[in-house]
View 1: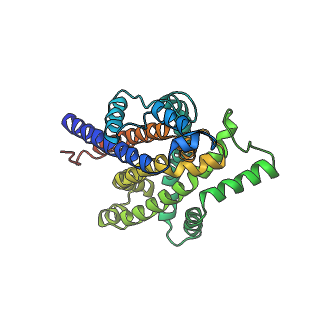
View 2: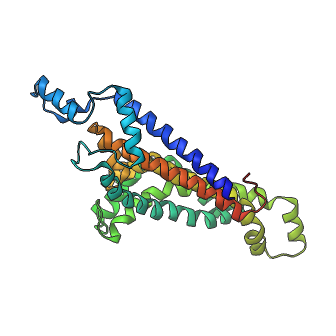
View 3: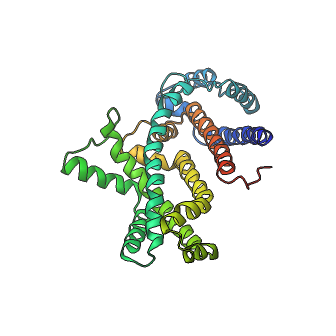
Amino acid sequence: MGSYIVRRLWQGILVVLAVTTIVFVVTRLVGNPVDIMLPLSATTEQRAAFAHQIGLDRPILEQFGTFVWDAIHLDFGDSLWQRRAAMEVVLERLPNTLLLLVSGIGTAIVLSLPLGTIAALRPGGIVDRLIVGLGLLGLSLPQFWVGLMLIITFSVVFGLLPTSGIGTPAHIILPSIAMALPSLARLSMLVRSAMLDELNKQYIQTARAKGMPLHRIVTVHGFRNILAGFLTMSGWEVIYALAGFSVVVETVFAWPGLGQTALQAIQRSDLFLLQAIVFCVAILIVLINLALDIIYKLVDPRIDLN
């Protein structure tokens, strides 16, 4: 296990380096922060002085070398938009995104197991059709539309919850629902399909014939055998959200997280802030994948990580 963790961490470092390199190249090819940050009336001398100040007048290889060295020290320079250290902005917004992910994706993970299992126990029944129908609806509705409908219903019409921002527990409710619905639909359908397949296997039929209670069959045999696939999908739901899906929810609800900050950095051609965000997100994704592999081994000792 120890050698596997070390190997995966080394691979993770290479992945983070590759991702940040791609972002470095792309951000240098698309958009010019000098044109964004300075007024149209700025002279050629002023533009040249600003480009020298932020290091964009140096050869591209020299810029990349400096970038890699600074990234090792978690120094991405000052945000052109925020006028302070880019990593400081990221560390300020990161807890907000993690809170949204834990409340939203966490809710989906907790609810999907019982919903998918209930649907699988009575396939074709009223409850099964209702859960499947709601699941398909949750997959079909765009997240931004769901967010807007939640705001109109619970904030504008009934005045029960705040429309946007952060500060109180009430502020997290609507963004969490909007974040949870697509993941809840996908995970519920996964659990239903996997549990149906498991309950139709021969050993389950034998256990039923021997008189084993259904709840014991589901909890002891069913959950255990579908858990690896469920954990994989749950981990990917978190990764999808980190990789970009949270942008929609954070933008609709003006939630000050990394997703909204990344979008604002792109709009303002804030290269340094965008690089810091991608670097931190890449590290989080690598750590999540490593944690999932370790959990697989703990759940099923038969899995060989070597």
